[in-house]
Length: 143
Image (cartoon, rainbow, N blue to C red; front, side):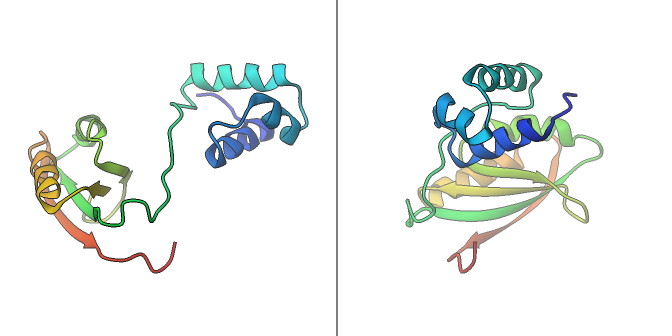
């Protein structure tokens, strides 16, 4: 595993805020050269510390979407395999391991209740998933 220093952590923090920031902007904010930023980005990507770049969408975009949290119980030690199956589902906004009675927590976003029902069926059909419980998110009051 790659040891991250302060510059690496600051670079990752800047990219989390704006994954499309130009290298020159990143270099200026970090107080390093563009070559340093390019080298560190290459190293972070090659090591797997940075998995990719993505787009973030405003929270109120798609207000009519169905949003939910699904708690997932996995049989035995199959969590890694279940995660691999769930990663391919574009409706999953996030996926977390957890402790307690549930093994995974998934945040889901779909266009309709019918789509949500289909996602739940796909989650429950994953090899190793033995139980799930979902709650629809009605309105965000604190973020």
